[in-house]
Image (cartoon, rainbow, N blue to C red; front, side):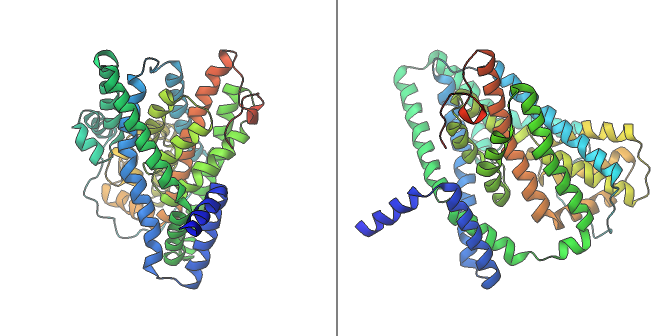
Length: 421
């Protein structure tokens, strides 16, 4: 027993990021040496399943607890967060338009992907979004519909704040602490989960993607890296007037890496909330902003919709002028915000975008099929960009409020405040 305790203590002494990197390397090595060993993949499946399972409960309880406290409120910081989410998503779509005009993409038509749900227009996306907000709260938690979870949690939290007894509020606070502790235990096992996820990717994916769709993959990767390393940092700099890269790189390292391998913004919500705590952010704000960001901060989804839609137009010989493409950026921004509420995610919004150019649904669905083929790369980068941006913009809004109030910023941004490493 003492030996086991020493092993656990030694494991916990090592930095989580370093442990994740070790798990990543082990996953690559095992994937190359012993591919097809399903028992190794189970580590990844269990890790993602645990995160997805606990995330809706975490958001629901945490938001109720935060808002039921005396100081819990949604102030100007929250408005800034929403503005940053929408601005970055639009700029991501615009960058994708520019790249698609400079480096036009085409692809070989394949068999159409058969989907149960096809989005026919932006009206349907917005309708789904609104209806999701008012669905049964238990159903919202079970199906991880974060717009619905947030709305009911805010309503219950405000009602508890006004009418609840102190004992009830303390019970909710204890529940929030309990779920948060459980999340920390799950995240502490991330190295094993990452090892399993990387093993699965290395075992199943070869280089065929690059030989057939290399140019298209490079366009998507280039857009996403450009937004992550240039556009988003520039937005943060304009608000904070500080070098944004310490914050950007920390978010990519501690949020983006996990999101890249889990390929699920919902699963990464607990990881992002723990990172927000390390950054010294206000729980009342980030407990709402992070799950909302997992729904509406969709830079990667906007890029995917735009690039694949314009590639479809080029493949079909449809001429698209710049102003029509600019309108596509707006459509992709609004559509991406509702992507998480549509079966199949961002790829199933491509037919909606293609309809702008008169491209029939049968052809547009072939673009969706291509999206699923390159999804190992596209979806991984898309999720990493989306999820790391959630934390970065939540922190930017918080630090912007501190700056206006004359409070010191964290040391890594040139201030005096200590934050957890």
